[in-house]
Image 1 (cartoon, one colour):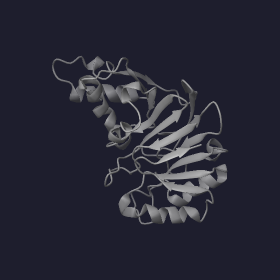
Image 2 (cartoon, helix red, strand yellow):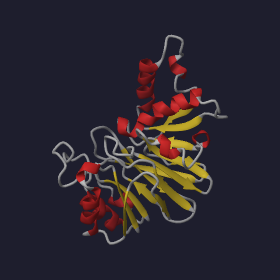
Image 3 (cartoon, helix red, strand yellow):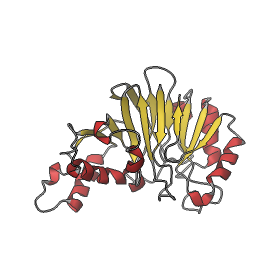
Image 4 (cartoon, helix red, strand yellow):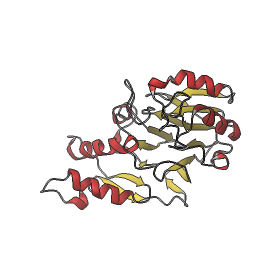
Length: 259
């Protein structure tokens, strides 16, 4: 069975009881997390032992997608139940330099800056032009249009159809071919009709764009994510329903989707 569990679902700031971007993907006994934004670890701990994760893959380096990686570093360092290995952490291009700079901010005089994160994570940058294989899961990437370089991800399990996570993307990104024939689309939907101009400035999908992508792909299930609770996710789902006739869910902590 292939399973997605939403760990957050809020946009650039946490909601009431809902963290930001974070998704647990489980294929057979392989456990991979896509992004780990603020307030997502507490949900992750309900579903899997974080010490046993097979990998964490980061779409881009905005804090609403990576902040809990810093919290996870402290958990790995100081929790009385230690991990028996480093956690594989797959970063986008330039991610290693980003975390080295972060180490300079957090490290004390007694810390080895080069090992501040590397002592707890097996860190490497993925090549967006190549497939990333993590045990039973293969991941391919496509560039999105956002404020900084960002990559959508397509999850290829060994059996059954695929899942696509758009990460953060504006409508200038052409993800139609990338998403074609995926069963599940987890789509950025931050740019609601009532969103302020800076949200709608070509850097996020709205619900209509997410629905069109899912419809074009022939998907069975659309998960609307990266939404502000103040902008009425239920109304956004109604907008998506005008275009997409499959199942529509609003991302919230603990939501599970099997495919």
